[in-house]
Amino acid sequence: MTLHFENRHDHVQSIIEAALDAADPAGAVRRHLRRDGRQLLIGEHRYDLDRGRVFLIAAGKAALSMGRTALDILQDELAAGVIITKQTEPGQPRRYTATVGGRAAVAVYEASHPVSDESSVRATAAAIDLLEETAPGDLVLCLISGGASALLTQPHIALEQWQRLTQALLESGCTINELNSVRKQLDNVKGGGLARLAAPAATVSLILSDVVGNPLDVIGSGPTAANPESPAEALTVLHRYHIAGVLIPEVWKSVIDRLTNPRSVTSLARFEELEVENVIIGDVHIAANAAADAARQLGFDDRFLTAHLQGEAREVGRVAAALARDAPTGACLLLGGETTVTVHGEGTGGRNQELALSAAISLADAHELALATFATDGEDGVTDAAGAIVTGQTAPRAEAAGLNPQEYLEENDSYNFFLNLEKETGRDYLIRTGPTGTNVNDLLIILSYEQ
Image 1: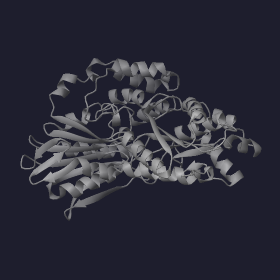
Image 2: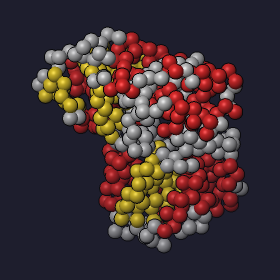
Image 3: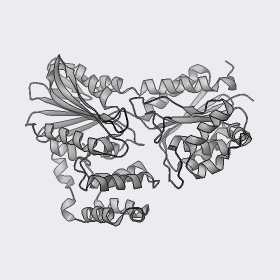
Image 4: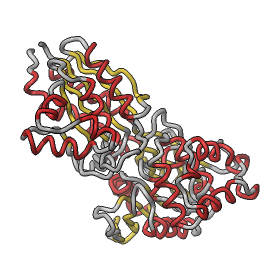
């Protein structure tokens, strides 16, 4: 089968659609949750429905899809539940009720992401209130997906201080693991806090992972996982990224007071006394393998290189460009993971768009190569794009149109670079999927065509 460079957008679209279909959260829940008579099967675990009541807590960008699927399966066996998902309209959080078996059972809250706000705190308070009803023999089924760290929160410091700290960390270039190292020490529901609040009930979590390597204590800041870290490790992160220099003294003092207070340390031994199980039901491997299958059906020689792609987005972009230049004709290289951006400029963008812009600069004048990178949740930074697609002609065309790619990169303004380039050339560069309802990291696609 002859692969034509001019069809690259169609090829990328087919590969993206396959990846997103495979990462569908409803399908993941159905594969791991089912009823067998009076037994509830959750992964490899069995729960006797006559033992007690079942409560549901779902939090994350995929919470609504995961929660509704669980409702269909549990039906009248569900006593009550709370679903916390990302708000559909910025600044306009909603609360409504989902029904099961013809009766109201689950309160749905929309909250703010990536920085928590009052709606996040209110929704979490409702979840905590629900957990106060649990008794021995009950089961709390938790559905955790990417975004839960912001949506499910009860910070130990004032909300405004929490917001300033989160924003500073998001702009620092720290990894999600490092960000959550800090958040786990400063929040009542993180680092196993939700499981402690659910006791004496048993807790089982079905988890859609958006973190490289699937560390249970990092995904969603580990609301039902033991936190192996100490406040000292959170302090190390804060000092490593010079957070004190970007926070007002009042906020910094509150953070330090909490992290240096011996009474704030949660005992790992106490957590191990709880009845808790965590089950990973989906991650970037599933999306990448489906993308590889789609590429193979198109006629590419598919090669899944890694699911652990990390690093500064612009640096990874240069490496990705080098991989593209060395890729054999007819190859589709796939890499999954999540990069970071250290914000120095005043522009608008996201890690995938910055990676793509950096790659475009390094790919200048390369022939018959295409590189696309996108966030599987459809949201790359605070933009309406999931990522971008570039070729060896992207940077030269930009310069011909009077756009300086390097200047946009230095300003962290990748979104406006691609937006302006689209206006100047009439070509599509930004990938717009809209919110996908799932979140399993990012996927980088490199396509090599015959020259």
